[in-house]
Length: 422
Image 1 (cartoon, rainbow, N blue to C red):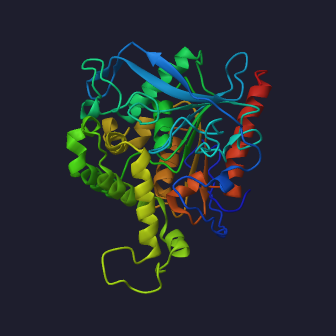
Image 2 (cartoon, helix red, strand yellow; image 1 turned 90 degrees about the vertical axis):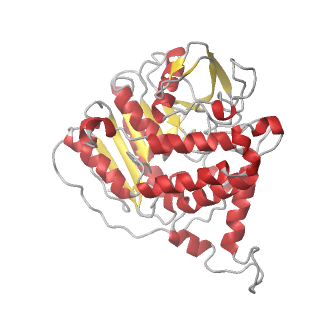
């Protein structure tokens, strides 16, 4: 077995988890929420890619009771779909990511896909074998219909009138895209963080449309603490005078201060205390206290830089929508909080991965999901990686983590070969 994680592999009984101790690897220094290019351009990139758009004019009913009458989904694909369309893998994105999972754009070669270290030729999710799809979720600001787009009923941007969407709504929209692409069953649905919630939802909502479910650094519901962080971030946006009740587009402004603070709050939760200490400690920018309210410490400079950058490209209404979708995800709620009952609907095989220093979505939450799946006699593999990077670890290169995912996809490929479908 690989060192560095705990494994519950193909459990079909009430057996407990097998514990395997490991030492922590050296830290990977990264400057941003997404892994930097020098960590993501390993092996071979998928190369130049182009987004595509699929339009839908059939109304999409939403959990809130509202509906989107007319919408578009932006997506990208990598690799080649085989003859019987059995090698398709759906990759679901997290809060500030998008359909741009891998590769680069011809007119923007520095815009590397957010999981380019994971997806590509010869990588853990090998595009020489699998046909990979990345979809931008509804309400986002990266192409799919969102608050900045025109409401067909008014001709004006939706703004705050864009309906609240949930993880389940996203999954229903993704299923419609799969229908259009002629994909009846995915070889796997995969996601990290909020993307992992979508993968979980797929396993319960469309149990016969995926064979494998990969859930990385995720949770079956947010804790009160996580909801609190999200609400602080939302309040920062909602109370920004430039927000204008969500109609800031008409005023030609952006609620940058609110977005900055929201990003700073969120970013704190993505890093571990160890990672922050190693990167910044109590280092001072100038070597001396300034005795004012500007930037004294390196960590302050870093967070302000992240907030400033975020406010230049992310949409405030989108941030509100996506954090609410995070808050509302709780598939066990309709079963009185019994996760095992919620997972009784599943049919897929599962791989779950967590990271020891991820306090945003802690390993305890992944173990909870493992036990609920085992209670249903589902086939589940679990890896708990001892890594210092906090929640961000799911985006970074860790040899053990990448090997776990690579070997799992190799087993899926072997299945397809044995069935004569590869």
